[in-house]
Image (cartoon, rainbow, N blue to C red; front, top):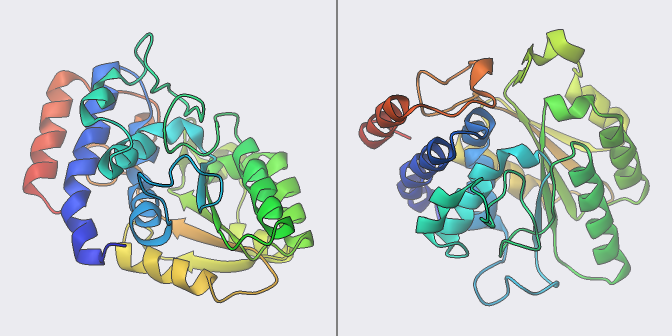
Length: 275
């Protein structure tokens, strides 16, 4: 497990790979990948007991990217873990590549669930957590949802089941950047207040004022381990496009790839600035 200082050293490199791969594909979802960066990186490098020796085993901690369109952040982190060759990242979304726009557990080492249809990922995570409970396995299940994804009714069916089965081995994050493809989530189909909704469904709720801060994410994960008899959700307030100034808080960067010129600008900024 890495400490927070080591994570900061990795941050700039992983963010640059996210920008590179989406640019090379000329398609993808950079905004929500960059906003979720600290969450996914923290899980793989400070929480989950997964490495090259047990990555293909079933008895270990698992992660489900319920907002599957943010696959660039997952692929970039898996490459940093050594499960994907870094040079293969540039094949993202290319014909014949294993790195599809939405992650496939049958094609990429380290992907624990194929996702893409919003709402289904958290449902699968609930099923995994129930299986661990039934088999008395001590492993934890982590999931990442989008805030716009929480407009899906299936999310709340899963939330109800997780509380009903008292899944204290399940920790879900909501990447609350406030924007989805059509704009402000409150304008499109307001799912807020998410904290009160999850609490009403029987979850332990943690709200992070800065979900792009490694220390806050780490503290939330540690708090979740102390909760018994109910699942935990972390509502993490993040910035869409975090780390690239011209992408930050812009809904139009939800599903648009940078041009070569914009990519160069982003990489220069990430190299010189504090990621």
